Image (tube, rainbow, N blue to C red):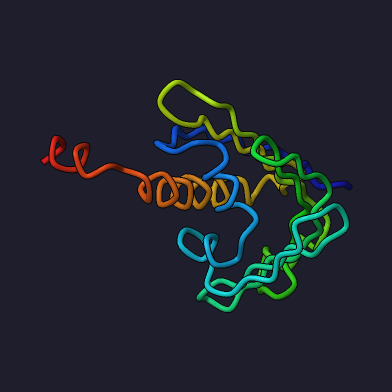
Length: 148
């Protein structure tokens, strides 16, 4: 019996240009500011996508599409992991991130497909948290003061 595969989708508004946000998707130094602790990224089709998390889990995949300032696509699976995560092998799921310029910033749409049904809630929660951290990197001082 085959396991049901599902999609997780998240959208977040970021108070920065698509050019700026794009850097945070393909540059290891910038990516470290919102997701993972160690990165090996070669942002070109066929290039490596590898992110190590503090818990010792390592996401491994390959970039499949790069359209500067508009779209980043890479495969995703676990190089190392235990339990149910071990079933998501490298290359077995796909993350598509699209950037749409808005008047005051960028609308980021993330779509992670090919996930085992039992892992979707966890991935949804984690993507929401990490994208929230990314968006928080660009909150202006005026917005921070107004929200207090």
